[in-house]
Amino acid sequence: MSEPLLTIADLHAFYGESHALHGMSLDIREGEVVTLLGRNGAGKTTTIKSIMGVMGRRTGSIRYRDQELIRLPSNAIARLGIAWCPEERGIFASLDVRENLMLPPPIKAGGMPVEEIFALFPNLRERLRSQGTKLSGGEQQMLAIARILRTGATLLLLDEPTEGLAPVIIQQIGRVIRTLKERGFTILLVEQNFRFAATVADRHYVVEHGRVIDMIENSELAQKTDRLQEYLGV
Amino acid sequence: MFELLGIPPQALFGQLLIGLINGAFYAMLSLGLAVIFGLLNIINFTHGAQYMMGAFVAYLSLTHLGLAYWWALLLAPIAVGLFGILLERTMLHRLYKLDHLYGLLLTFGLALIVEGFFRNQYGSSGLPYSIPAELRGGYNLGFMFLPTYRAWVVVASVIVCFGTWFVIERTKLGAYLRAATENPTLVQAFGVNVPRMVTLTYGFGVALAAFAGVMAAPIYQVSPLMGANLIIVVFAVVVIGGMGSILGAIVTGFGLGVIEGLTKVFYPEASNTVIFVIMAIVLTIKPAGLFGRAT
Ligand SMILES: Nc1ncnc2c1ncn2[C@@H]1O[C@H](COP(=O)(O)OP(=O)(O)O)[C@@H](O)[C@H]1O
Ligand SMILES: [Mg+2]
Image 1 (cartoon, each protein chain N blue to C red):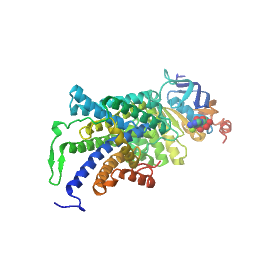
Image 2: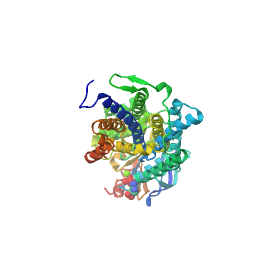
Image 3: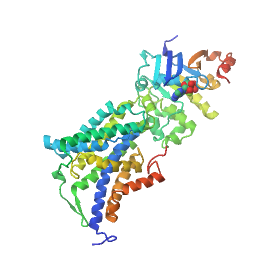
Image 4: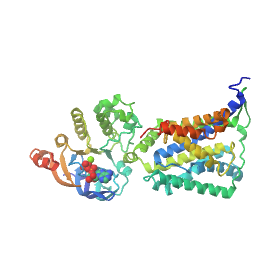
């Protein structure tokens, strides 16, 4: 089995005095799609933000290839090839769609050409002159994913990309994630909906109270559905 | 010659020109304040002192180094901009997460220190700075006499303001700036060195004030309090235009200069207060300012 691309070990993270991650540990191998499943408030977003370097205080270890990330500022982390699609999408209102799409600076050769991005997200091409936040929720989500594909980043952190979207759009995002996996991207995906997660992922980490309480291979998901439903409280 | 409402045209156009000149300074200064407020979330009360420093760099580089106006126009923004960068790196950057009040108090204190220092060194009476030879004289337009230097101030400030607007609203660099004004954390997580961008933006806003100071030196005298007198009006301009709005700062700056000039013609008693009256009205009707986005 190949070396992990990203390894998190005994990660603790804090919002001021409040302790949000309690010894999170997980790893992701190159080319995998791995999900973080868990109830609201379990610590999924905090894990993503810790990797990206936008959490205030955190301790423990986050290794990416041969680099320890825990002390790096977020711009340095991005430059290593990690890109973030935040839960609240982060589309800029003062930028039009084209500017939003072209905003993240290229960090490495081999980013996805804009034409290919439009092939994945045909709606965006028609809306290039619109103000970013005038797009529908689904289009904003697509824009938020599209803009991080251009830069040459190879590890994508997608925080609940399907949240609040219509089923057809969720299916489209599912297709996109599978295409990205074929293109060689490694993806850490936060999801609430494990039925959707099962259609795209290789493995699932179950998060509760700021730590991983179980890891389920996608192939075992069918047998372990009851256990998972109990974890997620659905 | 014709008369308008009993006002001789020379007086009318004369005041209109003075209004445009004042407006040019309002626009350049409130533009710098708007850029700084947008990205740093700091109300830069040191702006007037930095404008004054620009004028002093022009005066001192002429008297001590023999460097003429055109050199000052280049050197003063660089020197005062670097001073701004020093302030940002050592002090201001600690305040971004705090209430506006802290930044306002710090920059106000800094302004008092800087102005006090200059008053101590150079006294409070104005020092003369003459118009560069190339820009002396003027044009007789028939209905009025247009001094060349004043025409230059209006044209140069329009170019500087439009250039700044263009960079912010129409270029990639400006897109970073606008995006970082909205969500600096995310822009940094895309790999942009936002802290450095913030520092340079402050330096640029301060440099703009110093540039205005050099432009002002031949018109108003060079004196330690020249900025303190101006900055109160400029803050009113910023409030009327809308905090942080680039276009608002430019349009409101020129517009209020002209309104102030016209008030001097038609109702001189109100010319010192008209801007503040407008500010009060705008704040009542549209608290975010004429060009501000309500948030
Ligand atoms: N900005 C914040 N300030 C304080 N506590 C927070 C903040 N964001 C999240 N938390 C707390 O941290 C814990 C983990 O939150 P989060 O990572 O957002 O959960 P998830 O993404 O799994 O829903 C929760 O208890 C939440 O209340
Ligand atoms: Mg979350």
